[in-house]
Amino acid sequence: MEDTCIEGKYYRSNTTALEAQRNGLAIIRSAVGDKVVLDKDGGEMLNPVGIVDTGRVSNDSGHDFDRSKSAAPGIAARYFMNRNYYITDPDAFTVTRGKDDSALTMDEARVSIALAAVSGAMFEIGDDLPTLGSEPERLALVENQDLIRMARMGRASIPLDLMTYVPEDEQPSIFLLKESSQQSILTIFNWTDHSRSHTIGLSSLGLKATGSYAIVDVFDKKQVPIQDLNSLVVAQPAHSVRVLKIVEMSSASKTSEVQRPTPTGNSLSETKSRDKLK
Image (cartoon, rainbow, N blue to C red; front, side, top):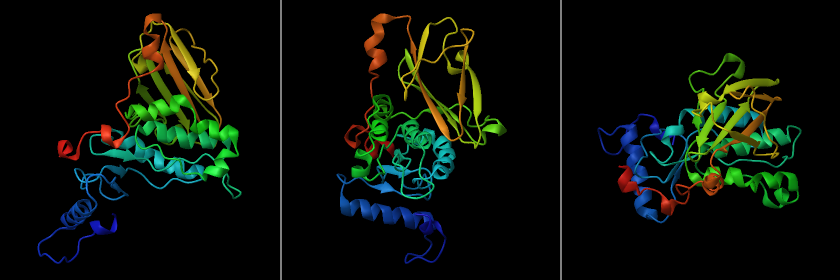
């Protein structure tokens, strides 16, 4: 996808590189038909719209924290593309230890799967499944129902600090997903090599300062206290992530809506047709 964007001489004269690439994709689509999922790799983001079903929006992932870190800015900056251009592809998450000396820690495994979840798009396991099955604690990450609901909703979490992150964070770190009027998911990454702490005001998340909220860590299921009824303090070790479920408790009658947010659909059969995207 990258190489075909380089200008050159083509069989048909006066053809640009982008035209040639799009012609090639159209030929592939015509050959495989509409029932085959066509997933573009990297390269130009806009050129394949209307032809492909899914598309990569960042670099390759792997059993390496640095790969997650380098993939995150692209996923954050392109959050708006999901289901507007195509179903975005953040590449597969990896949660097993790996085989070399740089094996993923548990915190780094959580980072990898949380990054896929905030994309609200393709949710793919990149691990050897027998190995994953032999590591119950890591298998539990893949079975985490809150992360699965995030993926099933099909909506990207919004990077709140995309253009405003502080230098100490090194890159965008704070994402928010409004699952319903009563429930939100706040995801905070620490991409640095040292501990970090954030104080986040509820009003900055679009939440009522006068509301009553329960905040639970999605991974360890522990309650997170609210400071001064207006903010929460999130402290994190290096190379880690906190995924917090924020539930408004003022209306018990809406519990079913809180616990089971309505998905927009994550299967290709439930998405907009390519004709509607054109």
